[in-house]
Image (cartoon, rainbow, N blue to C red; front, side):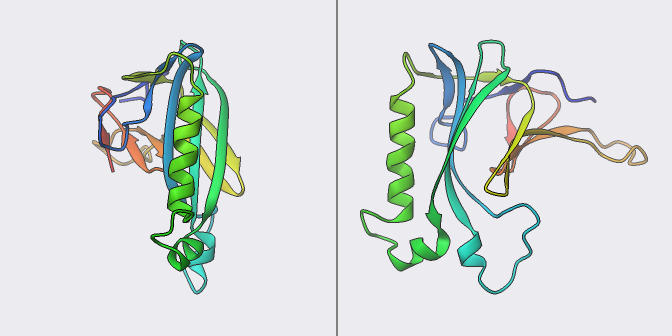
Length: 163
């Protein structure tokens, strides 16, 4: 089954899609997520390459991507130096997420439906990207993957995701 033009994403309080919804300007999808630069190969020094991002994607009321605000809170190496400090990387990310969400007028957490989109920031791919199986793989369906969060959306296209 082909990926639809507009992909529903279900709001799940307390889970990976707990910071999605609508606001006066349209729809939003926000998260705090770890990511490596595209093409990264695991090895020594990986802690300096694994970064924590605060992401806010905005869409119009019809689900077309309008803009993204992506902020790097720091690296895993920095987090491990001060894991429980009030100024840790995770604490900074949580504070930034709260601030960007507070800036959304008339915010309401709920299901959304958006078009696939893609952008690269600091060598990291962000977006909801169509993924297709090779034509010779019988029985496999296409899906859309949220990067870098790695949430997969597929038929029956009801907004639920796989990780």
